[in-house]
Amino acid sequence: MADDIADEQQLDLIEIQISEWLANELARNPIVAAVERGEPSERRWYIRVLGESKDIFTIWFTLRQRTLHYETYVIPAPDENHAQFFEHLLRRNRKVNGMSFCIGEEDAVFLAGSLPVHAIDDGELDRILGSIYMYVEQFFLPALRIGFATRFATN
Image (cartoon, rainbow, N blue to C red; front, side, top):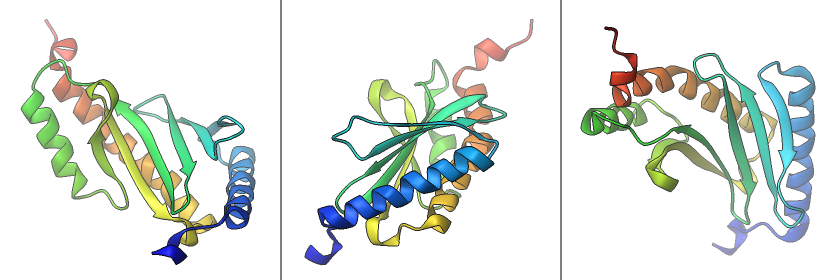
């Protein structure tokens, strides 16, 4: 629908809003280690996050005409137990709200979602950041232990 598309002026305002929100998060949120911008022609941000089960990961925010797309790299393609690994992640998708696990470049696993541009506000940005953090923390180690079991075997 045509009214779902944000014009350049609306996108400029949303870009400022996201940049200001990220600056505040960087200043006050201990899990946000760094925020960088994409190329000048892009409306993209890279948010470096400090985790516990996964030490560091980056969340990409990409502002498009209709949506704010967000994603993070979770884990490489598994070395072993492929069926069990992907079954684990597919079952986890039922517990994930507003995003899903998916296969990306080099068969790596990403967590990705999107939000309509007209729904973007500080509360939604908080929800996205917090949800991605929580899901990576909950599901990274179990997936790692399944897909790379031999590396964790004790002799």
